[in-house]
Length: 104
Image: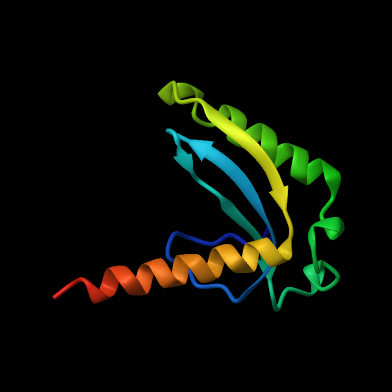
C-alpha cells in the first residue's frame, strides 16, 4: 500500500503487514502486503487488523479477475498475518541466495 507513485525496481523501506495467498497456473503465487515504513499516513498500520476491510476485499477481487484476459484461473486461499509474511520473505531470501550460489 502506498500513497506515492513508484516504478518497477524502486526500493522502498517497507513494513510487512500480511501475506495474500494465491494459486496461479497451479503454483503458489503469494503476495506480501506492506506499507512504506517512513510514510506517516501508515504509521498506525502494524498488522492486517489495521487494513481497511474494503481494501482487503478489493485485493481479493482484483486478483480473481486480473487473469481473465489470459484465461488463467486464480485460486484465492486468503490472508495470513505478519508472522507468515516475514516467514515468506525469509524463504524468498534463502531461495535467492541458494540460486546465486549455483551461478558461475
